[in-house]
Length: 216
Ligand SMILES: CCCCCCCCCCCC(=O)SCCNC(=O)CCNC(=O)[C@H](O)C(C)(C)COP(=O)(O)OP(=O)(O)OC[C@H]1O[C@@H](n2cnc3c(N)ncnc32)[C@H](O)[C@@H]1OP(=O)(O)O
Image (cartoon, rainbow, N blue to C red; front, top):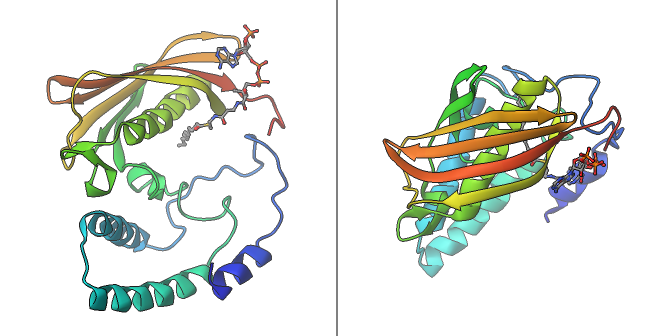
């Protein structure tokens, strides 16, 4: 890591370790400012381009210097996970979390959570199709969302299985749906589907456990 990264990590306050139940709900629409979404999009584009790039030596030298400079500037603005915009900006795709495949929630109701999800170049597994791991990541997050909606509490994935039914395309708006199939005490059984139009790409069967107060 760079010097700026070392500095940033040293100055982050120790997390009070409150587990899933935090005193302050991390839901915002303004952290990072009005152009934070554009910033996230540029980062995603960087990841997409890097996935497919084949730079020559001269360009690699140039890019390394540019990226070092960018990373130094970004590292100076690092804060702890609970206060960063990424993961809390509910007005942005995947709450502004660039590590997730971008999805936009279109429905939240008794039937669960529905979202429009697009795997991008960065999510390539092979042969222009999404990597299966990224499909599972999408199910985990939208499934966790559906669990939170069903029990109005934070829960954590105990298991998650994916049935890959057909190829999941990149750069195509897909429909992901997750819902609570049944709830037994702290256990929330979540099911999910991923469709490209009428074609079923994958299905999820998962168990989320409602966290106890203070549970880490
Ligand atoms: C707008 C904002 C949206 C916000 C939306 C945000 C969405 C984000 C979603 C991301 C979710 C994640 O990725 S979470 C990260 C990935 N998951 C993890 O790291 C979890 C690691 N594992 C754990 O922490 C733990 O094992 C837990 C919390 C899952 C369970 O531990 P516990 O709390 O001690 O519970 P425990 O007593 O063991 O189990 C409770 C009951 O569940 C059963 N059980 C527990 N695990 C399993 C299992 N794998 N398979 C079957 N059954 C199980 C037990 O038998 C028991 O049943 P019975 O005897 O009561 O019948």
